[in-house]
Amino acid sequence: MRASRDFWLSSGHHLLDRDAAGWLKVTDEFLKAYLARPELVPPLDACPTEHRLHTALLADPRQIVTPSEIASVADANARENWQVMIAWRDHLLRNETLEAAYLDIARHSIRFPHIFIDQLVHLILRNMLEGCADAFVIRAAELLFRPQRLRSGDGVLIASDAETTPMPSPHPESPLYLLLQVQTVADVELLNETNASSYWTRSDLFDMALDLSSGQRGAAALGNVMTLWISHLLAINVAIEPLAELRSVPFSWYVGLDAEASRIGEALWNGDHLDDAARAHLAGLYKLTFADPSDMMEKVRGEPVYLLAATTADDVLRLKPQNLIVGLPIHHEEAVQ
Image (cartoon, rainbow, N blue to C red; front, side, top):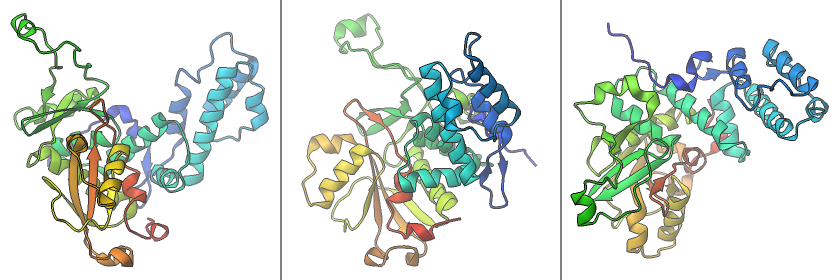
């Protein structure tokens, strides 16, 4: 029997345990990893209080840290870092699992630095996708915690990681530039059937592009990821299928998967015409149906839910997976593990 492939080692998932329900338990090893961040490691000239605090938490990362202890840290930047870190640690410990901590943030709009929340999504996805052998699904899951730069043309829509893909050159693709072979678009390897096996050894590089064009595996894979996300966090079974366009459909409920898509969805909800500029920013359309309609609010029970994704003005897609938690027409207080 072939062993399952590991991926996203940088997520730190090896530092965590699973509870009986399969959610990720907060461990001392995981908490100590935060203490290795450069923002928290005291420099040699840091005050004695900061050194004592760091050493004590390395010995017991769960020990109580009072506001007065943090207030006594001399350096203002270090003091702010410790305030944020202890608040984050306390949030994780109160909720006991990363999934519960994420749901609490999503449902109550608790503000934490994006880097912490993206890490939670990264880890929850890694846990959720354990044993998955489809590189297209794993690559599509990156869209939930890493911004993507999108390129489109002739019906093709390609997503590449916004952090690892260089910005396109500001120079136009003039005949002179083509003659001199000056590249104006980043050359990023596109995930396909031939090179899919290489994804596993380079998954932490985030250096492969994904075809999100209608009818391609990337678009379907993103639908599969969202289906698993809802099942893992809300214990609700849904089916999500990509659509080529919205035409003459009963738009009874929608979820914008990002800020721009929410704006477009609001316009459609109000019956406004979708102009060419807004349509050009649409990066994904999906239809979601509930396996058990009784999971839905009564007023839209049995109706499909439409999911929209859209790019910003600079062609970047920043999905907000928390919208799938709080935006569906369900009774959220009942959607618990």
